[in-house]
View 1 (cartoon, rainbow, N blue to C red):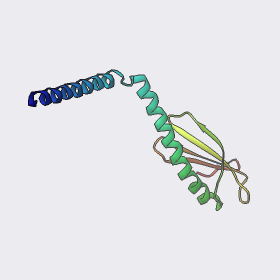
View 2 (cartoon, rainbow, N blue to C red):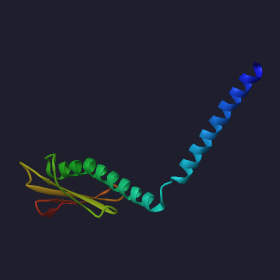
View 3 (cartoon, rainbow, N blue to C red):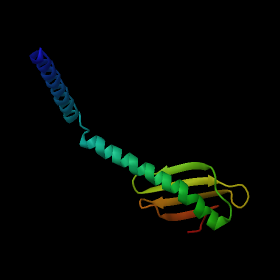
Length: 117
């Protein structure tokens, strides 16, 4: 009877090892291609630049105009080196735009067609 339990335990261990090997092979062969990695990196970089612009631009426009910019009316970008957000104001300006570079630095603020920064 002890031999039967040992053989069942052995069968379970062998089955477990087979499942682990099969899973490892599946994971190893289903990798992401270099093209997909590059595409994901560009998308992540653009997303980060947009998020930084949405944080930095309202502060830069507030500093230049005294009015906080709330709603983005337009977004322009090459998805690699810059993001420009445009806003519509209500009291102290009618339109404003703000650009940041790929490092997250505000490079340009234009208020009602006049470059402020």
